[in-house]
Length: 193
Image 1 (cartoon, one colour):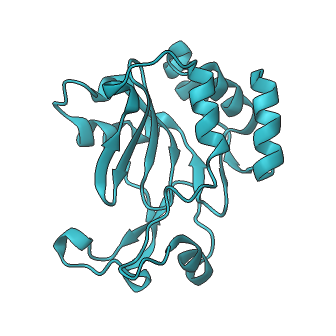
Image 2 (cartoon, rainbow, N blue to C red):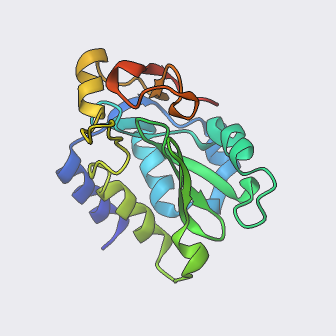
């Protein structure tokens, strides 16, 4: 499939995204050829945007560079200088592209990273890898369950409305410090930058 066909399939599956802003020219110039062509084509066509009321937000990678630097400072395998965020989930999940390891997912609730190519290097085309992430944007992988096992995103969206671009649902008190993993403990806030 071509990138155009991939985009058509994604639009057929998810509908047209809600565009928040064009991708800044400075960001496009700074990223150059470091990102797969799929992302460059998508950003040129849709800019910064979202689907599912903020459940999958396509973001400006330069805005999130300080967060990646903070999360991965000193990491010899996933050095922050080789990583750029391209999408944000409703609870702070960061979908990233790494110059060497390809698609990497970083989560802040709970704290973990998934970098499949780090352990099982493979030669899947970069555009296929990124396109797949967009196709599966609706799979609820970035949703979080409360203590009773019920997913929270739709309930939070019902209570607070859709997330604005570059916003997440964050706990008032993080569960690591005793905050409840419950809808009542979460509210919309600007994503850290």
